Image (tube, rainbow, N blue to C red; front, side, top):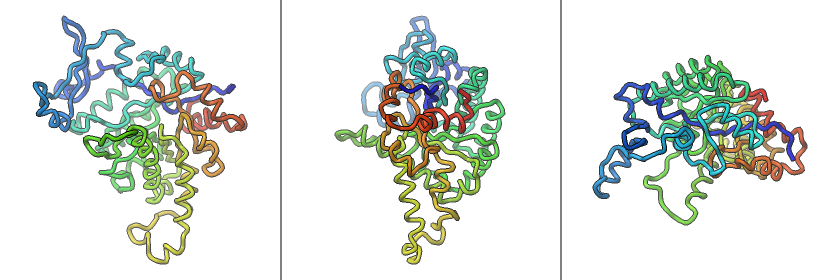
Length: 385
C-alpha cells in the first residue's frame, strides 16, 4: 500500500455563484447566478444563443435565453452545483479547510485546483470575460492564500484577448496563483500562431506552468452525433488529440524558445504520449521524406533537436488510471507523468485513489511511484507536501 503523500494534479473547484454579483449589472446575464426569492432560491443559467436557436420550435420555452433551476440554499448544495458532476461520496466545499479535509480522506495532501476548463460563455463580450477572470482570481487568492504550500490555484485567463491574458497572468502570479489555465486546443486560433507568443514569453519569464484540461475547445459537430459508445469514443479522441497540441508547441519552436515553459495536459490519460514521442522523432529524422521536400518551407519544423528532447523536458500528461503509460515510461521518462484523481467527478478515482494507485503501480520502484504521484507535481507546481 502506497505511503506517499499524494498530490492530485486535477482537483476541480468552482467559485460561489454570489461572485457574479460583484460584476456590473449588465455583465451578469452571461453567467449562472443565484436568485433568492420569497418562494426559494433559483439558479439562473444563461442559454447560449446557438442553443436557444435550436430550441426555437420546441414549444413554449422556445427562444429562451435563461433556464431557472430551483436549488437548496445551503452551502453544500451550492458547492455541488457549482462544481457539477459530483460523485456521491464527495463533499465539495467553498471552504478551503473543509475541501482539503475531504481530499485527505482519499490519501491526497496537495492539489492543483482546476476551475474553468474553457469559457463556455464565449458569446460574452471580451471585456466581460476580462472582468470575470479578475474577480475569480481575486477570490482564489483571498480564499486559498493561506494554503499555497499545499495547493496551486489555477489562474483564469481571458484567452480570447492575448494581451489581456498576459496582464492577468502577471497580476495573478504576483498573488501566488499558478498554473495558468487554457483550453487543451483551440482550432480556430491554434497555439502555433504568432499571436500567442506574448503569453508563452510571459509564462516562461514568470516560470508559471500552463494546465490544459481535456474537453476544451476541440471542435465537434453541433449537435454531436449519437451512436453506440459515443461518450467513450469521443473522450478517447479528445485525449489523443492532446498530442496535436504538444506537436504545435514543439514543431513551431515554442518549447525551444522558452525552455522554462511547462505545459501539462490534464485528465487526458498519458499512454498516447509515448507513441507521440516515438512518432514525432521517427518522422522528424526521416531523411527520405525531407529529400522529397515534404515538411519544407512554411511547414518546416523550427527546431534543432529531436521532438523528444523538448517533450521530455517541458511536456507532461496527467492520468487517473493508465497502466499503459506506466509501462511505457522507458520511452517518455518519468518526469512527463503525473497522477490526478479528478476530484470530485464521477469518472475520477475519489475516494478510492489509494487502491487505484496501488493496483496500477504494482511492481514499480517506490522512488518512481513517488515521482509520479507526488514529486513531479511538487516540482512543477511548487507544492511542498
